[in-house]
Image: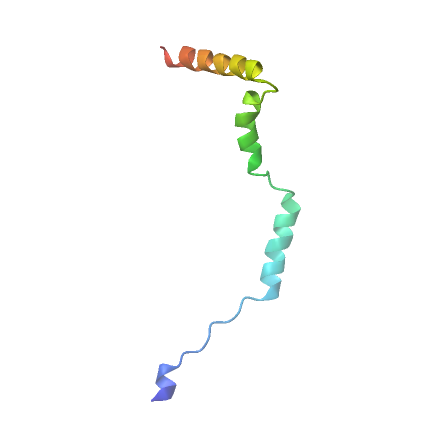
Length: 70
């Protein structure tokens, strides 16, 4: 009865399959870093002083209100 309760283990993935997948990924080249998108959004707001930041925020607000039809 014990033999009926045991199941054979599934075959372990071969190292060849993993190596092939890794090689294919490496051939695609480096992936874009997730922080690229963040900096594309934030970089226009980076400022050296509060006056520069105020000017940049005013410009962003002006553009966003023009685009929204307000």
